[in-house]
Image (cartoon, rainbow, N blue to C red; front, top):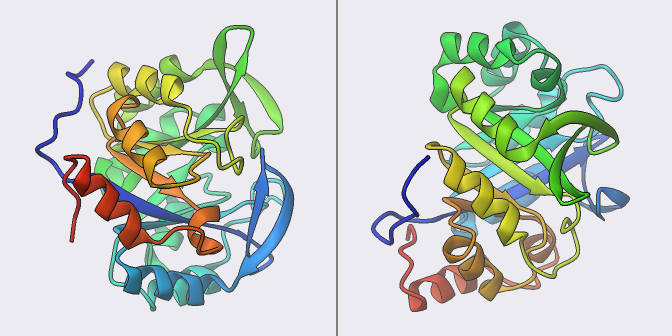
Amino acid sequence: MRAPAQNSFARRLIGCLDVRAGRVVKGVNFEGLRDAGDPAALAARYDAEGIDELVLLDVTATAEDRLALARTVSDVAARVFIPLAVGGGIRSVEDAAGVIEAGADKVAINTAALGDPALITRIAGRFGSQAVVVAIDATREGGRFAVRSHAGRAPTAWEAVGWAREAEARGAGEILLTSIDADGTLRGFDCPLTSAVSDAVGIPVIASGGAGGPDHFVEVFTAGRADAALAASIFHDRTCSVRAVKARLRDGGLPVRL
């Protein structure tokens, strides 16, 4: 367990590119996906607008039993000069190596890690914990934060706090925590979920799901005690700019990267 986040370190804003068949898509509660543009073009735009990092997730790779598309990864990596994490169908150290060779700085693993937690340790042993992001998709079920796999479609026996602790113990360097309930709603991050996990681990927690405006980022960095916050819809649709969010965070006394 760690102490609550202090104001001395810069909070990170992370853009998310959910990719299906080579195109960025976005939905609500992991359903109703719509086209949101070309991955490389969006990545270049976000880089120019001052986003701190990017996450590219091939949302059907696991269901289709394949690895994230290497061409898409390399096209995105060639257009940005910021850290890039990639997830989708990574089931082995060799899969992780392929994604990193295509241009990723980090790999994000989810379903495969739930089935084989030692995968976290093996990838961390090869590339270092700083290169391993464990993605957790959670939903409220009967008063608990239940973890789901296969892009939110399948239940698991894990609860979010317990799985985050296990992932950290296995060698994860970061947790990407997505609220299925808040995803795409634009009503704000799930701060109780985020704070529960943030307070339970000593590694950075990236909050994901529900961002609708600058104030939501302030809330998740304060009440949610997140280290970073990820958003898709508001940036894809230009509802709010990266610069506007960073200005609001600075006004709220939260340091950000220029």
